[in-house]
Length: 621
Image (tube, rainbow, N blue to C red; front, side, top):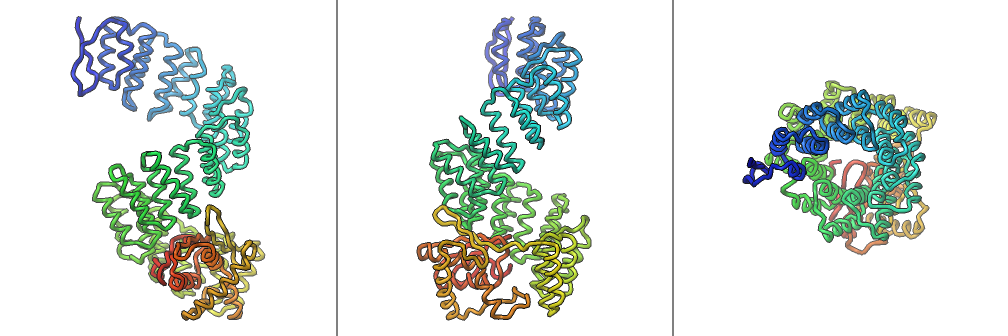
């Protein structure tokens, strides 16, 4: 009897030999359920469906081609008289990867009830479907079954415990694996790295006799997760020396480290490597490249990468570019890109709205920000998070709408956190609403008693009102509670090396030259009419003491060092761990004009690009 097999829904029929031996090779070629159904029908007619090997192949094909949630494979499995271990493993694996992973656990219980034999391949996919408590129970079954020392099973348990955060249990298993392979080592390194035990991860990494690209990537990613960005880049460079080809994950991790350190030269090198190796720019690599260029102050380069990935832009890529515009105070550009995103049918998510609302806040676009907030709620049905409310409080506060910000805080459906009150306190200080600032400052200290900035801001507000005794009491309270002040620091990367300066720092090898150069810079700035801005230093110091203190701010030392060590006309890039003060902001503007330099300064929350005596923030920060 002649028959035909439709290889795909769009191809023509081809001759098909109905001999029993021809069914098995064809099953392996099937890509659609309709194809498998035809062969299933033929196997029923010929009785081949009752034979073990053909039935096993048919079950595998059904599991591979059936859509998620389909009961067809299970229905077929339940009709098999005595399924062997391979069949049990196949159906368990299928459901562990489905939308109903708990079904695989039920199947395992049924397998135990039927006393079906196990093998090392029974457990790995089953472990994926388990909660932590179920993993522990399954671990007991594995030990009783005698498979605890089997490498494939042990590696699955190791991975599951690491993923569940049970690093102690994972370490216990790792120590008892008789013959570890590279998967065992990589899993344990990643487990330690993700649980902030980076030193243990590095010790294991150094002990490995044979490392693959995953080993290097896990360690580099661990450093990035632990905010050890210099160490991540050093290891990435060692990876190149050892001639290990980085994968996309390693490249993304290294680019993230470059973004955090502001090391544009290394980020550009990685981008060049990606182009030279013809590595496809997907949305993940695209996002980190956009983020890296934006955080290094190169928005044009960020936009060039964004435009290159035109056809497959994800919402994450759009969000990265919008956020880049936001932190550079280019609110209009962020809004235009947001509208372009909507026109192309890309639905913004919660993070996208955080980015575009931040753009409105940093650029003083009050009406636009409020309108977007309402659109998020009414049109996109996104429930505002505390971050979204924080953006609007910041938006209103920066614009001087203190009372309106207070009303919004009172109407929030959740309890305001320290970030919300902190944004309002900053607004009170900037707009000299000291009465509200005093009240908010006291609330903040109660809410966040271990943050030194809360005490300093409140003390400064009391000092601005002339209430020196109250200011002294706040500083005394801070001292009694042993709350240490976070020192201001500024970082500048030159020739692949990071140089960090602290306020009043004299530890740098070139400190003498730096302070001599600063004295000369100060003289030139005074010729341009520079007068120290000491208002931010509201403590009860004499004016001369305030000037001396403000001259030693870390930003000034870092910029001075940059002027010494870089070629005339080149860009100076600084990363500051705190908010840049008003005086350092003015000084940077003047230096950019007098010395014809572009200075890119990234402070705690945003970017300032100083050029020709002006700042990109337009003094709205």
